[in-house]
Length: 251
Ligand code: ZN
Image (cartoon, rainbow, N blue to C red; front, side):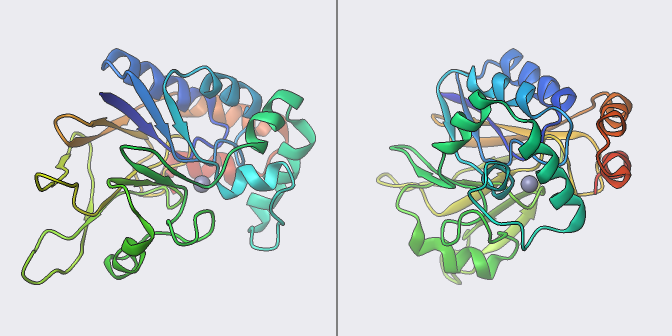
C-alpha cells in the first residue's frame, strides 16, 4: 500500500492543501499523520476538517494538539508557541476538540508504529541523535517507526551489522530511503517526513513523504506553496509577527 506521510501541519492550510494534493496525485491510498495539527498558524479548524476526511488514516497527536484542548500545560512552551496555543484554545470548534480529544501521542498498528516525538516519551522528546535512536529501539515492537516533532526530515537506522552503530541521514527533496528487512522482520528504522506547515531546516518548502509498504521505500518531497498568503492570515489573526516571518526562512 502507498501511504502519504506528513507531520507538524500547525494550522497552515495553504501548505496542507499543497501536500494533500500532491500525495493524492501520487496515488496515496492511505495516510500517516504524526501530530501537531494545530498551533502557530491561523486555520486550525480548516486543517482539522481536511485531515478528518482522509481515508485509511493512522494518526497521533502532538504536544500542541494536547495543549490546544487543555490536555497539557503550557510551562514548556516558548512565548510565541504559548500565544498561539491560547489563540487556538479560544477559537477551535467543538468538532475539532472532539477529534483531538481521542488521539494518543503513540500508536502501534500491524504494519508500523507512530510517535509524535519518540516512542519512549511520545509527545515531548525530540528524536535528534543516533544515540537517542538506539535508546528508543526497545520501546518499539513493529517497525518502521514514523516520528515528527523536530520539523526536520530525518532517517535513523542501524545499517552496519558488525558495528551495530546507528546513523542519521538528513533527507533532501526526492531522496529515497530503502527500509531494510530480513525474511521475517523489518530492521529498526525511524523516519521523519519533516514539517508541512513550519519547516525548520532552512528550506521553507512544505515537506512530506510517500511510504510504499510493499517495496519498502520512503521518498521525501519538498513543495512550494503560497507563503505570503499564510503570512497575511497570521497578521490578520493577530498572532505574533515572528510566526509569519519564520515561514519565509524555513526556521
Ligand atoms: Zn510541531
